[in-house]
Length: 609
Image (cartoon, rainbow, N blue to C red; front, side):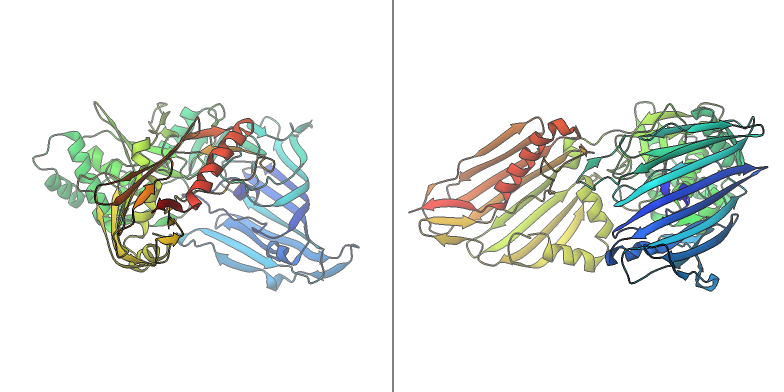
């Protein structure tokens, strides 16, 4: 269980917690003993948990993950009251065993043993123990609490017990050094301490604040023999594990020859093969044996037309190799948090695979799991971070993916409202908004719901026509055009007209006195609006003053212009710069965002005769 608490692998074991998410509970004591005996690793855990309120009952549902190769046994488990009296013991027939099939997996070798120990008198305690014997492993102990899980650990004791002359490496953060007991036959490394759960905060940068412990064997056998001695040795192990998986069947080679007939330029060849990948394959997560790291063969994808990120990337790399274009299987940590990789301590820090194609004057990065994104587009989940390019023979190395620019995340809206309150909306999305849109645009019902409920959320409206169109030049952008009727958008109050602002959607941040963690903005936020109001016969005597807020955090501008045909044009522009805002800088950042939110929430007032 401790291993699964540390990493969330999209291409490895799914993350399950023995301590379910949510609710008001705390771990009173957690003892984990991890011992090497011969070629096996035995993990024995005993946990005492306290459920404080009814809302904490979710944590009384215990899930313990394992794989088909592991031997898992559940020990004694019971409920006790606050006086230490045993209320009920767990019956063995209450333990359920199920496949840990995830919603996007075809099949897996991962399983879960689960049980529940609930009581109706609060608070109460749950005590349980279990043992897992691993025959294949490449770690000895990995622990990092899940950020956002509001569960304290009052006391823990984590022990790694290895034979003499069994080389290991370890590193811990935000927790104390281990006590090392050097015995005659073995060496014990013991970490003790407690953990107060970090409060979940908006866009928090928790790097350096979450405790973690990583203990690895210097050499291991997991599918193939490998070493954690350095990053190059890790890369060689990945290459060895996937050796021979790039063989294409003759029929596939014939298809490639036909596709590339007459094409000489490498980038164009790559583009054609990438389009072929998108058109004829789909992403399905597959986890079998050492499926967390080992790819399925290219022939498997040829036959089945599906694969996970490893298999599809390997397939793409194999096609490029056949076409004479060098390309590299590249490990990367995908997702919104984009935490730094400790390059001084080799470990499995990745959850995704892409393909890197170095060309003479360019380097292409290919995301092989999406059928919709344009050629060469990585996106918000993998931009601006270190990735590990696998080059056999000790050549594996870190590279850095390009950061998204302001223009690459720009989302623009043009809203035109005529005299009878009909509205025409045109919205071009890039960056994360583009990615969200292409994920749902084929789902007509979801897209329709978005258009009717979220497109103009500031005002009651009836959107009766809409359509989507991709960029004609293959850029990562999508345009939504919609037509609708607004319900009384312009209201008159004496000598004033009040118009809706169609506000930008901004997150709510904690007040400075409540904020405890740095803010991290992973990529720019860039918005532009042009709003046209065709006014009736109202004579405008005074427009609102323009707004121009310029700070180190970014900028926000509003300008107003009355055209000759009595149309009011409102132009708005917002840019939030990426990067970290420390606690010392947080007040300025908070004031910047709060000021914008306050302006955006207000109607626009015009003075009339």
